[in-house]
Every structure is written in structure tokens, then in C-alpha cells.
Length: 260
Image (cartoon, rainbow, N blue to C red; front, side):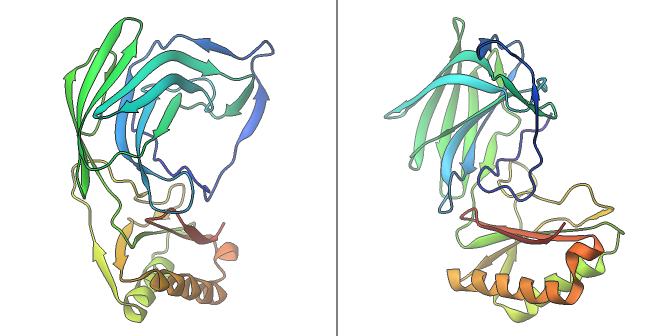
């Protein structure tokens, strides 16, 4: 399975249904699955992103709020995670999903060793943090793996533009793209084909899901202008009434959107 996209702060569309799962005390069960490992950038609040070490089970669990319980620490160039198991809360959030753990750090650019321990086994990864990327090189692994040996970092003063339409029309998405490019000084850029991209790359669930577009801008004031243009455009197209969603997220985790 693909790793969960890490938009952790202020999710734009969230629908969680709670159900009773375990009426006894919360407990921890064993990890009987391969654990996927990703070192990337994410947000816990609005502001510059942090480097995170993210774990998730390769296969879904019965509830999407299961968590990989681990003791996590950073000392110098050593990053250590000691797995305890999967934490299973009393309340179950549907639908099913992987058990996860996202560990925020203050890591600077440099070279690190990630050590992951569980039930007497140790997996090791070399981690390299550079200005535009984070690399992972497996040295000795048995119960974990990574799907991406490189994760691209957020470009400062940038945002992702996403659009979807229920009726399959492309005109509403193309229309706002044109307004952005004609009205503001933006530089469109792309990420390399290989590796993990921290931005979402498309909407989901629509008849037409436009491929994500990525733009960089000169100053924070430009993103404020983007928001104003989007509001004006919504007055014109009435997105919610016409099955249109336009969503943007910038490098600091700020999210704006219109539609259903």
C-alpha cells in the first residue's frame, strides 16, 4: 500500500465515524505486519514544516485510529525508536486504516543513523537531510521497509493547487489556473518523478481530478492575493452548488478552498 499522505494540521475534508470496539481498558497488541518507514516534512501547526519520522503498518487495521506505540528519541546523530506494539483505543474510528506513528523532530541538515528496535530485532537506516531532499538508505532491515529512498522537501514560499469537478468538466479548474498565472507573478515548478512528494498531488472522488500544480511566489503577501482571487472566483462559479472543489495548501500548512 502507499504511505498515508501527511497533511496533519487542519485537514480540509475529514469524516470520522466513531463506534464501540473494545469495552475493556485500552491495550497494546503485537505488531504482526511489516512497518513502512518514511522520513519527510510535515506540520503540527501553521508555520515552517518539521522533519518527521513516520511509521505505519503495511496493511490496514480494523480501525483508522490504531497507533504504533514507540519510545522515540534523538541524541546527536542517532535517532532511536523502540516499538512497544500497536495501541488499540476503546473508541474505533472508521473506516479501517494503517496503524501509524508520526514523530516530530528538530533535525538540522546532516547525516544521521535511524535505529528501530522491536522484540530483539534492530533495523538500521542511514538518513541524509539536505536543503531540498531527505534520503534513506537501508543498512540492515527485517521487520521494516521504506517505499521511498528520497523525500522531497517543501519549497519555501510555495503552494499546491488542486481541483476536482463532479460532472467531469475541466473548464472550472483551467479557469482559475489561468487567473492565477495572469494576475500574479508565480513560478510553476514540478517535483522529480521519483520519490515522495509532501504535497497532495490530486483531489480524489470526482469525475475529474485535475493533476496538482505547484507554484512558488516571492513574498507571503502574494499568497494573500491568491486567497482573494479564489474568493472572487467562487462568487462567479458558485463552487459548492456546482460540484466543484478547489483546494490550495502552502508550504507552511495553510489550507484554503472552496466547494463541497
